[in-house]
Length: 185
Image (cartoon, rainbow, N blue to C red; front, side, top):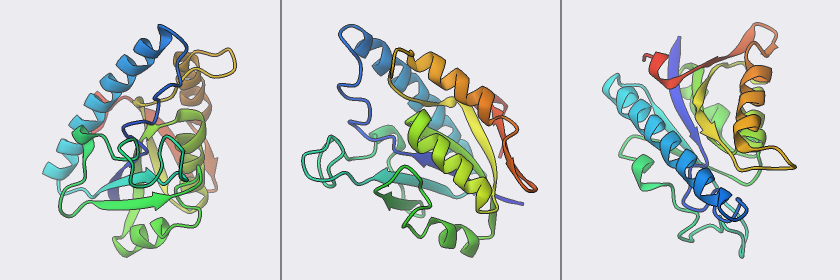
């Protein structure tokens, strides 16, 4: 089964201003640590000749991820290289109104290793959609994050989604959760 690494919305301003007060520094530190883990997976994928796909959210004018803005840029640690595929999206689901499924099928990819931002929106929605579109998913358990929301800390949101998504299926396709150090390409 052919595999690809899919990194979602790790853009400069993805979590900018999402933390309250001193909590922003904690959110930022968690994001930086997650980016390091994904960067290591990106290196390992490239060394194993595994396709690297970066999803970039195109926000409207005035949005923190407004297309073309500094905040919209993919974090430099994960910047695309020659041969990488960049998919632009405008919704939480990386498959919705994009050519992601077509591009994966053209490459014979049936398994996605998924990480990125924001856990409860784009990561969750894309992982579930991938399974519904006929792909197996390995969600990088320590390779996705978000900001606090609705009285929940980002740590709780990440832990909840890891628990809920592990074993999620659609027919024969499933999501399994694995930490970055256990993933081998």
